[in-house]
Image 1 (cartoon, rainbow, N blue to C red):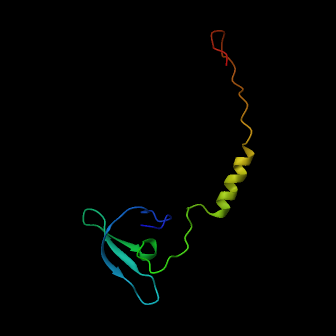
Image 2: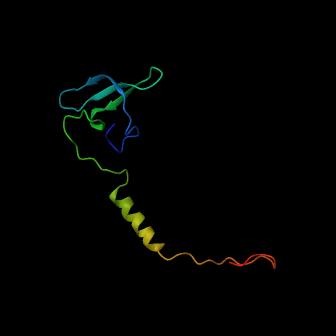
Image 3: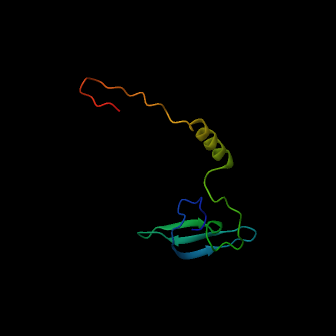
Length: 92
């Protein structure tokens, strides 16, 4: 699997058959485990006839911008307001 957004990304399978309908990319049938066959889109593999532009991450641009704005809010460390709970407690 070469599509980083596919749940099986990075795994290798034995190809059992390939369907390539006219005008559509098609699917692979692969051997999984214990006799189970999986149907995987050809576009999610390196057998794709063309190199589609795929995102390199599962995060969208909007999600990344939200994450960056959250990081900016948390730039200053939180104050340490711990206090000793008794005379024998160590001080920090």
